[in-house]
Image (cartoon, rainbow, N blue to C red):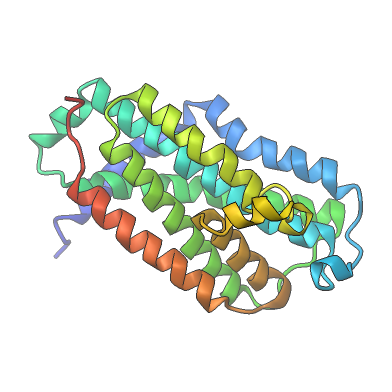
Length: 251
């Protein structure tokens, strides 16, 4: 017998995926900009460098750009969509249905995980073919780091979309978190290239540990237990708060 809670989640996920495909500008912003950064910086080559612990520049940049894709989807696109649904009364109509908050949030999570997966495939494919990206010796640590990073960023995005009352507020708060974070976390520039004060700020951000865990897995084939522990705590804590404080209406 099919579990009754799976059907609404599957239906919502299909609907959200179809709606996302109708927003080419959002998809382009999420997927095209990291590719452009890879093209611009990958031309410097991927020779091993003592600065990066023996890894090449491209090997260090690609994990950061992957987190960039996940963060753009989780912190910018998804919270704005949830707030827009609330503003337009869609959430109010969902409230009188059998849907639960976790099903609504889960459908968005699956949709944006899929888009992040496309971004990963594009970055890895272009990096390997055009810029000599070295592929991991083992994909298991990489997949663990990818999942931990994606879930932590999605959980933060859920919290923004669940509690902020309007689209404009969500856009403002999301941008205030997103833009500083992508610069000081190592998502765009390797942290070795950042000044000390920027690295200190980055130490307080979940995105930094998403980059750190993925880079360690990619370049060394290792599992960064500290980074994964921090990401797990962020995921559990923020997701729990998001579900408990979920707002169905703007006022």
